Amino acid sequence: MPRIARRIIKFFVFLIGFALVLAALAAGTVIFFNAAPGNNGAGGPYFEPGDSISRADDGSVYLEVRRGESAQSVGIRLANAGLIRSRYFWRLLSSYNKDFIKAGTYQLKIPATQMEIYRVLVSGKQMLQRVTIPEGVTLKKMARIFADAGICGEGDFLEAAADTDLLELFNIPGKTLEGYLYPDTYLFPPDYPARSVAVTLANTFFSRLEEIDPKASGLSREELNRIVIIASIVEREYRVGEEAPLMAGVFYNRLRIGMALQSCATVEYIITEIQGRPHPEVLYTRDTEIRDPYNTYVRPGLPPGPISAPGKTALDAALHPAASDYLYFRLVERAAGRHYFSRTLDDHIRAGALYVKGRS
Image (cartoon, rainbow, N blue to C red; front, side, top):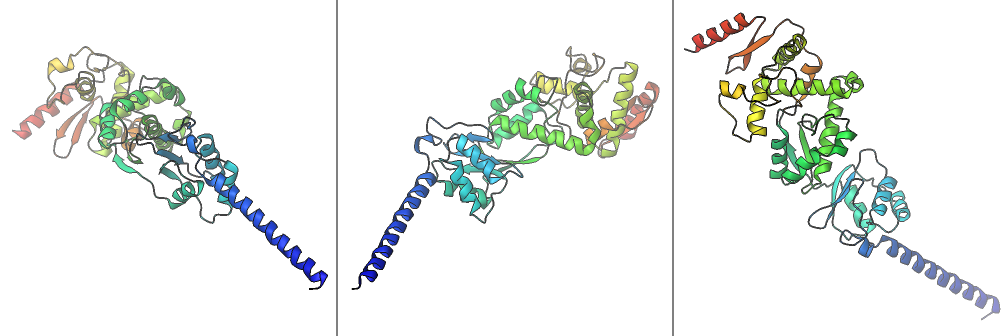
């Protein structure tokens, strides 16, 4: 064989060998960085929950991908939590992948390779439970709903709702998030951190509040708290939506002249939420005379805090009360839930007598 041909063959053999070595090195690099980080997984000592990454009771991990968040941002959070070996490999993986990660909360079975985690995040398949929080529900009842749905413990939720850091974060002057957790239908994974649940509901509250009235964001926390307290009372009083602004107007009128609010809903709150007794079918004089700061029959002004979770109608009514000189209202059509509004106590009493006569 000519010498030149032998040299060409040797050169190609060298190139092939070099290429194989490079391929082996590349494959080894991919295998190494793609592999689960061993003891850095959820069960290992270096796993760091935080930044929307939490560990479930079964050892799996919940990861929240925020709306509009980039794959690079997710990779940084995964690396900081010890769930992947390299954020740079994650960036490379996402750059060459035509599928994009989708916002949502995902359950990750750990340990897992980067490719396995990425496949989960682009699948859009979330482990979520639908939970509906009714309008007018109290904080304790809300905690029970989440516990019954398997989202978080009842005590854990109540503890999160009283977290001073959260109260400071949302600039709430009260002792709990009562009234500032928006009633709506939510999707949460099972065994989700109670603090994250509370933050989601509080964020939704302020988002909905701004939708109702963009100017609400400029209110001081004392002004907003006053509105939320009124809304929480209106929420428990009204049954026909169009009457809610009139009721809010009545309460503001009473506050303006120093008259007691005399809301039955505040007495019911004392009985069920503070005293832990069953919800009363009828309120008696002894109930309206209970010595408690929340009793608006014996204590003028607003109660210390909200008494329920107000929805859109009640919040809108408290923000935009109907202008009137009404000081009283009473239920006169029980089936329809309609009330009679009046300006004087005599008129209020006559309306009650007519209602009783009509029923008889």
